[in-house]
Amino acid sequence: MPYRIIRIIRLLALSASLLAESAHAEKITIAAAADLKFAMDEIVADFLKSSPADEIDVVYGSSGKFDTQIRQGAPFDLFFSADIAFPRELEKEGLAASEVKPYAVGRIVLWSASMDAGRMTLESLADPKISRIAIANPQHAPYGKRAEEALRNSGLWEKIEPKLVYGENIANTAQFVQTGNAQVGIIALSLAVNPALASRGGYWLIPDKLHEPLEQGYIVTRRAEGNKLARRFADYMGGKAARNVMTKYGFLLPGETAGR
Amino acid sequence: MILSDSDLQAVWLTLRLAGVVTLILLLLGTPIAWWLARTRGWWKGPVGAVVALPLVLPPSVLGFYLLLAMGPEGPFGHFTQALGLGLLPFTFWGLVVASAFYSLPFMVQPLQAAFESIGDRPLEAAATLRASPLDAFFTVAVPLALPGFLTAGILTFAHTVGEFGVVLMIGGNLPGVTRVASVQIYDHVEALEYAEAHHLAGAMLIFSFLVLLGLYAWRPNPRG
Image (cartoon, rainbow over all chains, first blue to last red):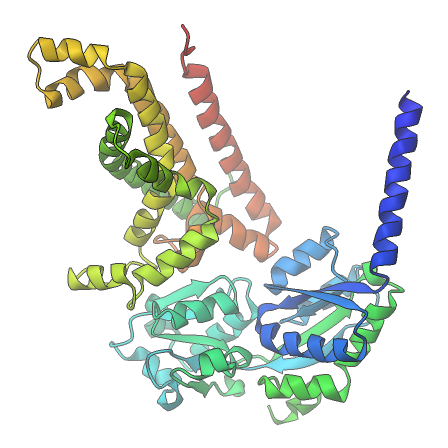
């Protein structure tokens, strides 16, 4: 009797794996940092135009969380991190199937939904009329770390810290500002140039000499070793088309960091 | 215990939040539960459903609407600003309001069940002894429903301690103000500080187990 049950289970498992194989011969899941939301959507859509049979799912979230999840065996084939340190660590521990490739350098901006942030500077944040300023959590969000560095390096941290509220990731930080609950926020340029946000308030680019570079990198995970679609997409990211989209969404490209 | 100062601050804040919410809901939830238990009107269905909503709504839905409603453009935000209270997101009292919504069914439902199980007869007896309805409520219904009050209070407290999603969405993660224990654990995990996360998470696990153990061990047999 138990033998029969085992046989049935085996049969089910076999048919399930066959089904999965035949239905989506080429399907990958990408874990991408929240700041990539708009740019990655467009890059994936462009990529799929030339290979419409393939299927690509993108999951957006915080890089630190993805790092943890990949260590615990999460089914991600590519990992685009907002901080290149995370994929580097994964590679060191043998969890990558490719070298770590830089794909962009992020920039931070002051952004407001109710005021013209284009006329502000970091000094304006000390204005008593501004009572709430949102940044991403510097403890684990790369954009939050850079925001803190910029405020510290301009000598404003002590004055401004009591007004700060912390978003879980950079998209959450933008929500705090968009809903008006914080008057100003320090968010990713890639989010601020998106039409949904760009139509309101404007932004001011924070000079990148005020903070460490936001170097962003990606890997093919060990799980996707030998996966052709993952490899093809990884190569596509380094090509001209994808780089143009990244530029359009306010990312500097790795080659362009010289002027920092 | 190897909890850091910021961990202890988060724990203390969590206990304070849960305590305040439990007290407020005792005051607000009791009349609602009483009315739900006694009424035969058609409103009973809709009100009961609204009270139960937080049981099924994802915290992200509640957090999203609260963030909009309490913001400068939202109706509740207009109201608090008109009262000179300012805006509630990113404040302790903002969390109290959010948690009161979130934990409402955990107060109302056990109380309603307790009031319903009393039935009409003890109250009719009180009325024949010329007790006013209010008098009967405090001298007859409340003592009879005391186990229900304890269950409701403990569940509300414990459920507020366990709150996470709503706090993350409207709290702004301010130490000592809105950074509760569950958020503190999340931050530890995100920053890959697993040892710190273990200490606080372990403490939460033990606390929750003890609370529930107390509740179930103490709860008298309903047929006894």
